[in-house]
Length: 208
Image 1 (cartoon, rainbow, N blue to C red):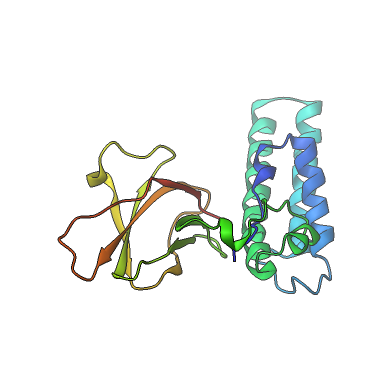
Image 2: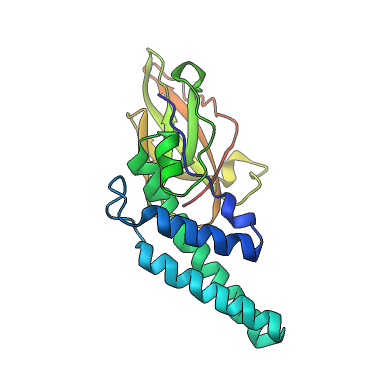
């Protein structure tokens, strides 16, 4: 089954809309039995949103260098918190778009199992992780995954670094920096492999 995930659409919101989203997520996670232990507690998100609101009002009153920096820091801190809980909501929702909405987040478009690609890479269920999937063929014994740090893929496959070698079709890797973009490519190794790899197109992932 192909699951919906909580989108990071809040990263592109204006300050005013981000403040609204922060309060909305906090209220959605408060005493919500679907999400009993968020990575960042609802009260903490409320405090971070309060901080952003105060910094915004201060900047509006006096748009100086110090006020601008305080606004930047407050915005980044709230976004980091929202990213963390987006990952938590995605994991606890088990792909259910309505549950993701109930957690205060925007779900991605759900796809049926028949629409699931043979390979995929997407944000993992916890901060610093990525979820990788490759449907092995009948003669494939394992999968090799490579990673490249950056929004754009490199010009050469040699610039990628080994991410994992596994016999599992679906698993998560941890240890990546949150909020950073990575490109992943995968290739199967057949039982009677001649050493030739058939890499997937680069799969771009924003690490939660």
